[in-house]
Length: 211
Image (tube, rainbow, N blue to C red):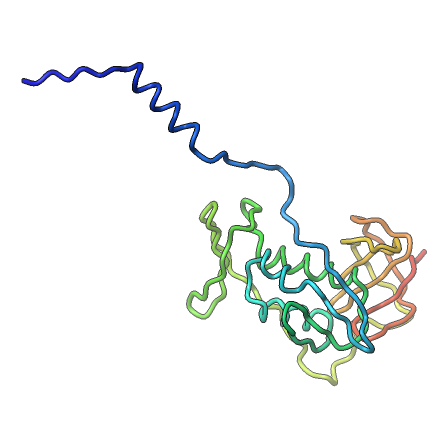
């Protein structure tokens, strides 16, 4: 029988040295966010100058992100290098609001809130799989309009209930109403209120608080 003597002091020393060489784990309670969109107007187009950087942080296919933005803003857009170029003039707040919506719908895990996710097709259904907690959830596509002859769901002069989801740099509240982005002067994020639509331009609606 062989007796093996263990020098526990030497073992502790080796363990301490090994622990010192391990990388430190960084933890934070800060909410995951995407880079601030860099927007400028070029003729009748709007340029998202750091589109490539944004999709890198989102870790999603650039064409998928572009298709989502085109649909939400009711326009046509293309990718040129690191930039995305959209037909029409759109405010920064609108693009930022739609990017935040994409983040919540296609990136953040609904269970743990982390962005460590990937999209997979399972039986023709797009599923988000979280690599952090293992959660799965299907991505439900928004239903498209059944035809151009359908009456608009938002009309000038009418009153609607909205919830303010963001506030623009000029202080206007921003809400989503069907396919429209609604701007409400003097509204605060999180408010639920009645607004009267004064003017509609494309997928943008400009309103005022209703009594």
